[in-house]
Every structure is written in structure tokens, then in C-alpha cells.
Length: 354
Length: 169
Image (cartoon, rainbow over all chains, first blue to last red; front, side):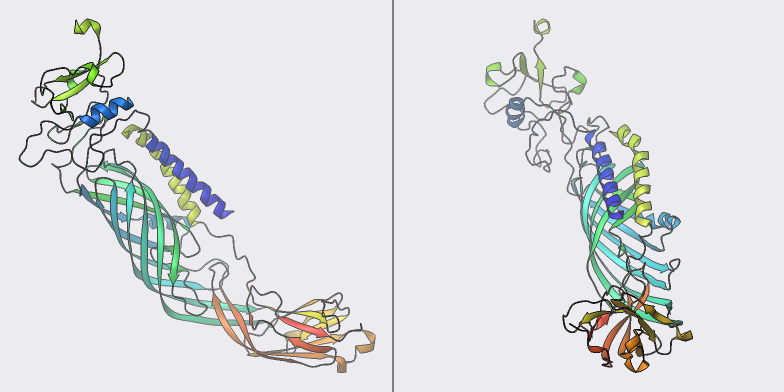
């Protein structure tokens, strides 16, 4: 029954997270100019940003008749985040008799991949009601190594929904004291003490979570972890109940809540976009307006289009016959004030053209 | 995008607390016995099948107040034999209340020698004793033979001792 509830809750959490992510979908998308989404669309060293290959945009995207916002390409190392997991402080209010706290270090790679390292300590002191023992584990270290994948890589790094994996290891001691074993028929009551024993455990986790910016470099987030013990050292018939960093060996679910501080590593290199997806710093890699059919002049950002080889480089419209445009649509190459050429796909307006 | 996430944050926070509460909840309790008890099952030596015996009494030698495990019980097939914790051997007596064999000379005595092994496997069951049976013997008045297929007795064990009784065909 408990397992069923845990699975249902996990599904609900996943659905809520996916619904949040789904708000970003629903628009038509074009094929990016660069098929590899991790390559920065910057000119070669020493060259000015003038033209970028237009072919895939003009041919591929128009052929598919889909238009979308091009998301910024983040650099290899976008930022570094340090976090503190303090969920067990809250869990103790619900009666949890063990606690673990850890510091995490995450490196943001292309706003997609987040290698993570977690170092922490944990302890346990449990005297269950109605039972005959006290279980203790002193403060013990644990370490976890893994990586997360951010499904919101097209958005600003301040909002992240990620799924990841971790591998953890902990070496710890434990003891069981105050044991009383009763034998009703013989009227006997035997007291025994299990001496302190050493153990270690290797375990793995699948992690899912959210991270949201609170203010400036401060963020908060939570994670749900499904974990399992791969291997642990047994001491005869006295098995460890609590594993630092893992929690109770009998529970397959664990929760974390963290506060983060983000250190940006390369401000200038990665593009800075606002909530509408428009570039704030047009000196970096550019993108098309969100609606490339729009005739709004303010959307003339540095474009990703350049005339194909052999064509005029400035000021001339491209013949309709050369491009697989939809009926009534015309491709026009303009000369923006920045000196960088851009192409707009505009609807043919008979009156304006005339 | 930002507005959508902020709107959903209270729901996500509630889901988080719910998950946290569930994961912190206690378990369903101990699903097995909290004491290891050896159980002996009666079989017919002639047919090798399980039998039920009427008018049988069982007690441990030295039990406080001469307490009985069975007192002139009917239709007995399984006999619980709780081992002592303060010693490494325990003896039990089976007395037959049937008129023809009710004399104490027809009683059978079972003797078990064992080691006590503390076990901690589940936080909800706590620490329990398991028994590793080292040696066993019985008298042969009404019992033809005894068999112990598994020498470790835990709180999960069911039948640990087989008693083959002399019975008519």
C-alpha cells in the first residue's frame, strides 16, 4: 500500500513538473541554423559578425514552414552553483530520527548538463516507540557524484527542471544499545548490547527536481530521489538500518531541499535574454524575432541569415522562384542599421509593395 | 514562463511536503513475529503423513509455575517449543492423556542444545534472538524418531522439527 502511494505521488510530481515545462511548448519551431545546438554562432577570431549561413534557415525552415525563437547557445561553463541541503531539518518535525546535511557543487555546462558533487554528514539516534532498542550512528561522512540534465535548457538558467543520477558512498559506525528481549513462557528478560560496528555502503539514486531563482544569485530548489543500496557491509546478523546520505535502508524514497548560490563564470560570452526571449546584448549570438513574419522594425536583431553564395549581399530581394516559399510570401533581404544583414520573411502586402 | 512557474510553485511546494511526509512516515509495523519459536509437527511413522493427536499435554521442564504449552489439548498437529534465552539447552515433555498411555512412563522428553544469535534486520521488528540448533534428542516411547531439517530458527521460521509418532496403520 505504501509503495503504491509513493509511486502515485512520484507520478503526480512528475506530471506537475512536466506541465510547468509544457508552458514553453506549443509554438512552431524552425530548424536552427546550426544543427549542433551547443555551438556558439560567433564569427571566427578576427572576423566581424556579418553573415551567418542562411541556407538551412531559408531552405530547411521554410520548407518545413515552421517558425520559432532560437534559444541562446550557452558556453561550455556557464556558471557554478553551490548549494546546501537542509531538508532533514524539516523532516525531523515529522518524526524522522535521522538527519543528513550536505553541500553540493554543480557546474553548468551549456545550460544542459550539470555534473554534481555532494559532500555531507549524517547521523541517527532512534528509539522507536514500543520496541526494545536504541539505534545510534555518530556523525559520518558521505559523498555523492553524478550529473543532472536540465530539460529547460532553452530558457534562462534561473529556472531549471532536471533529472539526474548519483552514485554515493559512506563509511560509518553503528551500535544498538538498551536491547531487552522478553520470553513470555519462561518469564525471562534478557538484556544485551550490540557493540559499535563498522560498515560501509555503496548506493545509487535517480533524482528529479526543480530550481528557481529567488533573488540575484540566490536560488532554491527541491529534489525527489529514488534510491537503492548496491552493496553494504554486514556484521553477522546485525545489519545497519541507517546509511548516511541514503537515509533508512528500508525506504526507497528520499527528499532534498536546498538553497543555492550561483557564481557566473562567463558573463560576456553567453547571451543574455529577457523573459520574452529577446536579446539584451545584441553583440552576442543572435536570433530571429519570435515571429519572423512580423513587420515590426524593432525586431530587426542581428540576423542569422546571409545570402547564399553568388547572390547579392545587400539591398536586394530574392526572387520568389529561388525559394520554396508559401504562396503569397516573399523573402526580402534588408540592410539593418547595424550593418549586419538580416532576412525577414514578410507577407506580401500588395498595397505596401505598391 | 516565469509567471507560470511562480503560479505553480505553491502546488509544487505542497507536493514536496506531501512526498516528504510520506517518506518520513513510519512503516507498516513488523510483518513477522517478534520472537523466534521452534515449531514441531507431528507425523505418522507408518504413513509419513501429518497427523492430529488428541489428549496431549506439553510443558517445558523448569517453566515457572509449571505453566503448560498444551494442557490436554485436542487435535494437535503443531507444537510450539519456545527455547530459553538464559541457557543453551531446553527440555520439553509430551504427556499423553489417553487412558491407556497416560502413565508418566509413557511420556516423551525432547532435548535441544543451541546457540543464541541476536538478529537486527528490520527497525520495526527490533532485535530478536535466533537459534542455531547444535544437537537434539528424544525418548522413544511414543515418538519413533525426530528430524530437524533446518538448524537455524528465526522469527520467520514455520516448522523446524518433525516428530514421527508410532501409530497404527
